Amino acid sequence: MNFRDLNLHESLLEAISYMGYETPTPIQEQAIPQILAGKDVLACAQTGTGKTAAFILPILDMLSAVNDHSVKTVVIVPTRELAIQIDQQIQGLGYFVDIESIAIYGGGDGSEWDQQKIALTKGADMIVATPGKFISHLNLGYVKLDKVKHLILDEADRMLDMGFNDDIQKIISFLPKKRQNLLFSATMPPKIKQLAKKMLVDPFEVTLSLSKPAEGVLQAAYMAHEDQKSALIRELISGKKEYKSILIFTSTKKKVNQITRSLQTSANDVAEISSDLEQSEREEVLARFKSKQIRVLVATDVLSRGIDIKDINLVINYDVPGDAEDYVHRVGRTARAETTGVALTLINEDDMHKFAKIEKLIERVIMKIPLPPGFGPAPVWDANARPKRNYNRKNNNPRGRQTQGNARRR
Image 1: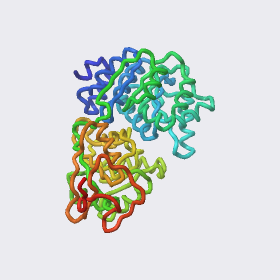
Image 2: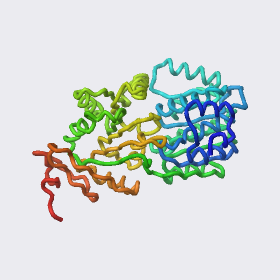
Image 3: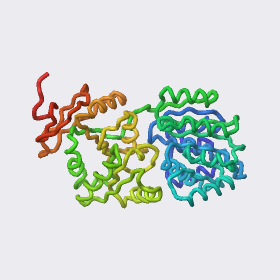
Image 4: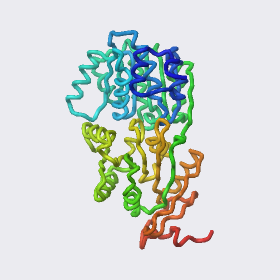
């Protein structure tokens, strides 16, 4: 199948061709005809499967027939980064269509609020918004939603994890009862099924590769004590010119800064991004990373979902993510759109149980690679290990822990 087989507007086909897309992905192939037919859709698909275009294209096709620029589509997303990304994709795919869109999110200065208010008052065909900021505008009464035909929730599981369920319900209360609803989620836990049952009417369901990293990702892990990790990362990326774009995830903002400083000493083009940065600074860093001006980007999980950065060669999990699902999203930053990539995870003695849960989730045992020569003993992998209190390190050996140099027989 090609995009022309989906009976999309000629202007959209021109934009698709201009952007270099040739054939629809499985989720696009399945969802687009159903959305064009007016069906509610419940779609479960992992990061990197093309699900954003799966709803943008048919919505743009339907909106192209009406040019009054009233608000007809509302897209709700969990983060400002995702709102910006989707708005950019709307502008790209709708380049040859007379459609206006706006991203509504917080974190900027007062001028952004004024710009958003003007756009919302004037009217835009598509609004892409984070829940809290959109509600702030709605509460002031100048946003007209009586002509809304489509409601889309993207990364719905993430929104519920972040506690946005009540906000979603409040936004829905402002919308016409008769509308098309599209719910996209990377996972399908019970709370998503409950939301879908409440929100969707006789939905068409699409489920693709639930909670599995893309086939093109080469996954591996290193057992490493916490104080070995920074040196290990320097070793892994030093001189590896084939890794032109590297993304490092860690669990806290403090570690982001520490890792960045550590890598800067080895003459890498490295930058950091976290919620501590102003929105304009975050956008600038992302733009430089996308354009390959920055080789290494260190980030918290703010980037693990919803950021469309192509050609990332290497993803490193400095910490094992606390939620097994987050591993899929972190790893999903590489090997996008049928490319290949490498994902490495550093596992200390207290994180082995979390990584075991990840392996169970993705139904795959990840290869454990020995530390390079000169790093000293490392923790011994034990899928049944649990974190222990009174952790001490002395001579590269945590008290009471097994290492490659002192493993006890069981």
